[in-house]
Figure 1 (tube, one colour):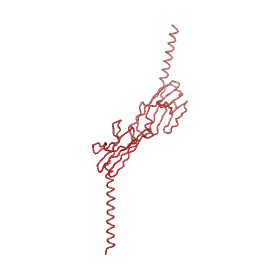
Figure 2 (cartoon, rainbow, N blue to C red):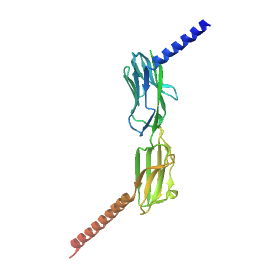
Figure 3 (cartoon, rainbow, N blue to C red):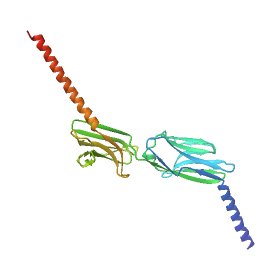
Figure 4 (cartoon, rainbow, N blue to C red):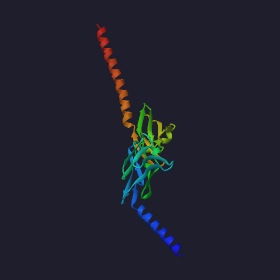
Length: 250
């Protein structure tokens, strides 16, 4: 009975010491990181220690695939070799993973794991992208407008408006193209004539319009340019005719 009590007491003391030692070190990361597409984003894993710390292994890991992206072995830093990422280490203080241009393929959970003389600690950061697009283009003719949005995330649609009236049902939607980085290219055409129109990028999953592109000014400019060219040609023909009349006249 006495041996049993001593065994339980030893186990309790050993566990208590282990918990106390582990509580002397901690990892701090942002639980969720909401960021725009195509920006430079850094994930920081900060070490806080109340006692002497010896880092045996410190890593940033893709939690889904368990791929090690940044590895510190006994203060020696090894990166994955992916040029779109950068690893930086401040000994005993911080391991940072930086994405040079974050895009949808980076939207996932990342885990920071520490093995030290104080035990094992882990913390996670979830990277989430805001609705975004890279570029917009507008092609106009006398009667048609074609609106393009590239690098859209998540997948979107082109909506058309005449004033406050949604006329998207009268447009020709072009096939959506998925890019290698997980973004989308969307486009649509609408027969506009001389009407005032606006093309908008609609994100169904968020139920928001990211951008609205009016075509009125561009249409007017296009028509003015055509009118100016026609007027210039007409003026030239009249001037040339008068000059011939004077030269050939009596």
